[in-house]
Image (cartoon, rainbow, N blue to C red; front, side):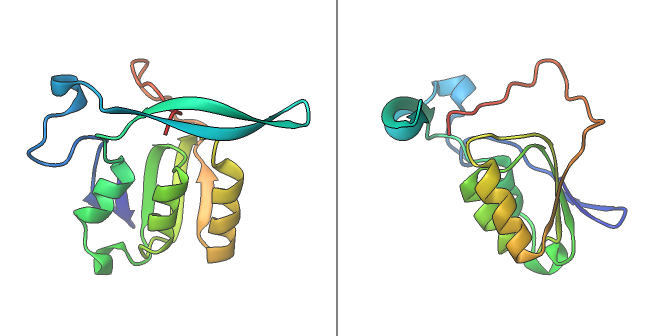
Length: 139
């Protein structure tokens, strides 16, 4: 959700590009990728699977709102932005990002970038998302 003061500027959700069947209709487009992790001080390669059909809500929000409207605005998201979305938000004109749940994979580097950009980056601890909300940490 994108807000300027008390004015709602836009909302968005995770989904396939317009005109393309959503994962719920056509199934996920799963790809494999490998990621380095450190276990007991040693680097290991771990295979992960992720869906590439979905455009993140933050990306959809930026695609369907105007830069002029975004200047000085606040973005509210359920989950802390991934690295790609954080980069896009950092260049979008927003001055604050509020999230409910952390995204551990990218958390430290995203917070560091937001600090460097001067974007307020905070958690909304009192929010309780609907129980059926599932956090996807695979991408």
